[in-house]
Image 1 (cartoon, rainbow, N blue to C red):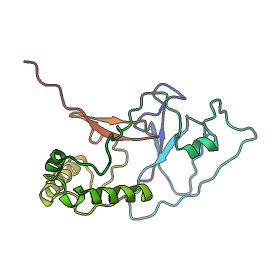
Image 2 (cartoon, rainbow, N blue to C red):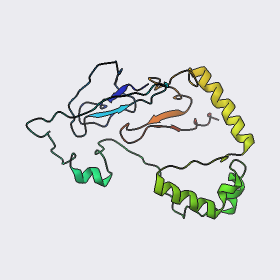
Image 3 (spheres, rainbow, N blue to C red):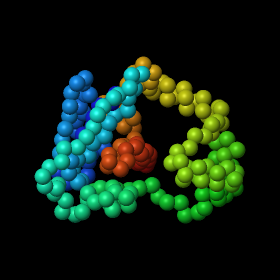
Length: 207
C-alpha cells in the first residue's frame, strides 16, 4: 500500500475525476515524484498502507515565479476554509438530508431496526449522544452495534467474499478498485469528494 493515486478527468483537463485512479505511483526507496498543482485539475491521493512498516516521506512545494492559472478563484484561502473544495462540473448526488430530528424514530422504524440493531442505540438519548459525539470528533465507534446473530452472519459473508477477492489478513486491496462492482453495485464519485458503492435492485422480469 501507500501508492500515490492520480485521478484523471473523464473527458480531459478541468473535468471531474473518475472514481478510479488513472495512474498509481509506487513509493520506491530514495525516489521523488513531483507534479504541477492546478485548481480543479490536480486530483491525487495516497493508498492505505497495509504493511507493518510505516510509509515515511517528505513533502514540499516548489514555488514558481508566477502564480498558477486560477480563472475561477478556486485556489483561494476563502474557498478552502468554506469546505466546498473544488467545483463540480459533472453530476453530484450527495446523501439526502433528514427531514426529521436525528433523535426521532417512529414505532414502525423501531420495530424494524430492532431486528438488526442493538436496542440500546435506538433510544432518543443514545441517538442524541452519538450525534453530538460525531459532530465534535468527526468519528464515532459503536461497540456491539449489531445484534450478535446479525453480526456473525455479516462477518462470515464478508470473510468469504474477501477470500474470493484476495483480500483480508495477509493481503492487500491496493489497486483492486473493481472489487465489489457488479450484480447491481456501482461505484459513485467523484473521487476528490466521495467514493462508495451504491446498489440498485435489478428491474423485475417482464410478465
